[in-house]
Length: 302
Ligand SMILES: [Fe+2]
Image 1 (cartoon, rainbow, N blue to C red):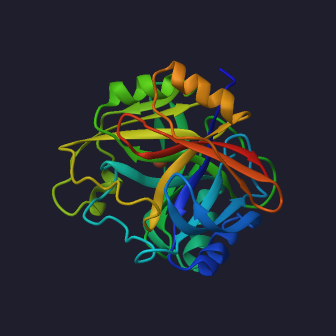
Image 2 (image 1 turned 60 degrees about the vertical axis):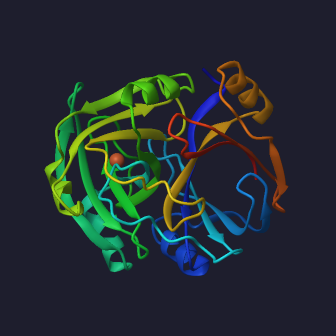
Image 3 (image 1 turned 90 degrees about the vertical axis):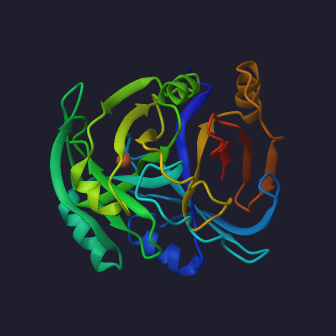
C-alpha cells in the first residue's frame, strides 16, 4: 500500500501563535515550512497556519506539527473540558525522543508541566521495550515522549526530541476503527493493551475508566493510537481548530490518487484544496472516518 504514507502531521490549535512557534521550536520543530494566513476551504475558517518540521526527524519520529490559530468568529475555540485521556477526539501528540528523561527535563524547563515522570516498560504482544514520559504544553495539550528502545536505537548524538511518532485519539468501536485504518495503510500492530495504565489515573476527573488501546503503524510516516474507554466519557472532539491537538493528516504522494482510493473504499471526502503558501503548494482534502474526527489527506509540495 503505497497510496497512503502514514501520519504526515498533527494539527494543534493555539491561541498565541508566536509563543507556540517559539515553544515547539525548543522541542526541535524549528523548521518553518510555511506560515500562511487566509480563508481555509474545508473547515471554512479564517486562520493562521504554521507548518513545522523537525530537524531531528527520524524513521520512528517522522511526523510534522501544524499549528492553527483561528482568527474569525470568537477566535480559537477553547479546548474541550472534562476528560482525562482517550475520550472521543484527539488526545495527544507523541514525539519520539533520544533520552526521554533528559528531554522531559528540558521541556519542563521550557515551560511545560510534567504530567508523568519518566518510566520504562514493555508492550505486548512483541515485548517491545520503551521509555515514556508526559508533559502538558503551556496551553494544556498532552505531549508524550517515547523512546522505543526495543524497536529502534536512535541515531547518535545528544538527548533530543525527534518528530511525531504517533497521534492518539479516542474512538467508539476498536474493531471498526482498526478495519477502517488498515485499509489506509496502518496494517502493522505494534502493541495492544486492555490493562489500565496506572500512571494515567491522576488525569481523570473521577473513577478512571477501563482502557483498550492499540498502536498501528504504516510502512512510512507516523503511527496512530486509537483508544476505547469503558465507560466512554464525554465527547471531546470539539470544534475545528480548538486549543490543543485536534486533527491529523495522512500523507499521500498524489492527492487525486488518494481521494480516488478513498472513494473506492466508500469513504466520503471533501473536494481537494490547493493553497499557494509561497514556498510551494499545500494540498489537502478532508474525509469522514468512523468517528467523524477531523482527518485529512495531505500532499505536501512545500
Ligand atoms: Fe501514546
